[in-house]
Amino acid sequence: MNRHIVDVDSVRERASATPADLRENHRQESRGARARFEAANAASSAARPDSHLVGLRDEQLWFARAVMTPEVAPAAVTDDEATGVLTSGPRLCAMDRLEIYRRSYHARLVECLADDYSVLKHALGETQFEALCRAYIACHPSEGPNLNYFGRKLEGFCRDEAPPPFALRDFAADLASLEWAIVDVIHAPSSDPLTLEGLRDVPLEAWSAARLVPNSAFRLLCFESPVNGYFQAVRDGTQPPIPSPRRSATVVYRSGATVWRMDLTAPMFEVLSALAAGESLATSLSKAAASFGPIDEQEAAQRVLGWFRDWVGSGLFGRVEVR
Amino acid sequence: MANRFGLPDLGVGLGLRTVHYARILEARPDVDWFEIISENYMQTAGRPLHYLDAIADRYPIAMHGVSLSIGSSDPLDRAYLAELRSLRDRTGALWVSDHLCWTGVAGKNTHDLLPMPYSEEALDHVVERVRAVQDFLGAPLALENPSTYVEFAGKAMREWEFLARLAEEADCALLLDVNNVFVSAYNHGFDPDTYFAAIPFDRVVQLHVAGHTHHGTHIIDTHVGPVKDDVWRLLGGAWRRTGGASVLLEWDAEIPGFDETHAEALRAREFIRRAD
Image (cartoon, each protein chain N blue to C red):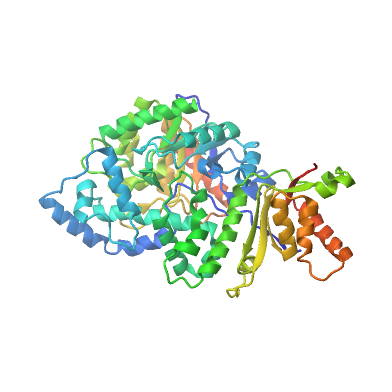
């Protein structure tokens, strides 16, 4: 069975540092800084503009507007405004000092999305991925204290909101869905896994009505493209082409510290969908039977037995409920 | 215990980072203590806590936050505080710290440590909020001086005066980041000794060091690379003034292997000895 582990450090943490990616950006920006500094000093030596802001709230609203304005847009505040509200430093004018925060704001959030969507970044290439992130940041600024969930709307953004032209829209949305499922199960509570020993406690006659309840850190996904295969190929260090559309299904789940991804055949997907919806084992298996194709009952039973042995062995189920 | 809060000098610790989890859990290295970024273990019920529980069982822990937004003019986020307290209780963290800054306003969060205007109004506002947080946590909050790249014009105080008055009026602890003092001193043109002279060192319970990136016109607090010798020397002087405070290395990008990161942190001992 084609099952893969996601690396332990695939989701990096947040920190209080200014993003390191900003460094090159700063080198470029610093080149004209001296001229701007001297010009600003000459202007302000005549008369320093007064700050038009009254009180802390006003100051913070003004500062946030300046910082959160997209870098592709003109600055939200004028040089005169910046000089009225902020001091020049020993080597940078007020506006250049303020711009450090604007660059830092966007770089931090782009970096956060790149952590969560590293394979999407690979698929789109750095330039298109960064443009996508910047559009996302402008549409969906963070409203919570935690960056862990900042990227949760990227799949929907790729599918419905990202500005055209966006050639890989559907593939990007599917890939974002897979990568977000990985983040999601990392943070979801995980139940103690049901073990093969635990199954032995269930009386034989109870099995047809029994419910196998998936682990709570479990996401069942279906796609228009084989994105899990693409994800794995990128993780393996190859340079796979973007695959042609072909329906696929993948389950992502966590058992203990290990996050698993597994491609599913149509019958597997049918069984797991039914179990996840709360159907009994017998009903779930009968729903899957239709998608088996022309094989005899004994062969089907052998296949199903193999799946369940593997699924239970890797902690896909949390418990069995016997009615 | 040199500080007025009776908080212990834990020695030289490291910021806990996911790339080091496996090494820490397998080799159980001899590290004095770890500092965690609080938010990395909040709004999660999953794997981050799985690792944290195992590490907190074996090492002393302190919590360091980036989203308290103590200076914001938005209301305090009570749900955030409740989760912060719950994480503190879960890990047995010896203290909780965050930054003298604001991270957002009007419901939006920039996730950056934005600079405060050092006005009387802002001081009153932050003092009241620090008291409220301390009441909620039932423990002193340690506030860290951030690296800053701008200063507001026409304000009553410089950062060191604001921090000193805040600490006294709110009766809070301080986390003195000597790299941030160095960075801000360069960016704003002040002398770090002027800063240190104003700080009530009996309130300093922890010291931070980190690498930074110099751009000629300004310095950015990137937490990349080894700590610069000028910063180590500041650490030695600050540690001596505390009479003994816990020291912590932050390394947040291009993070080397655990042993190299730990060896860098342990350089603190050399500079502390020299300053004695």
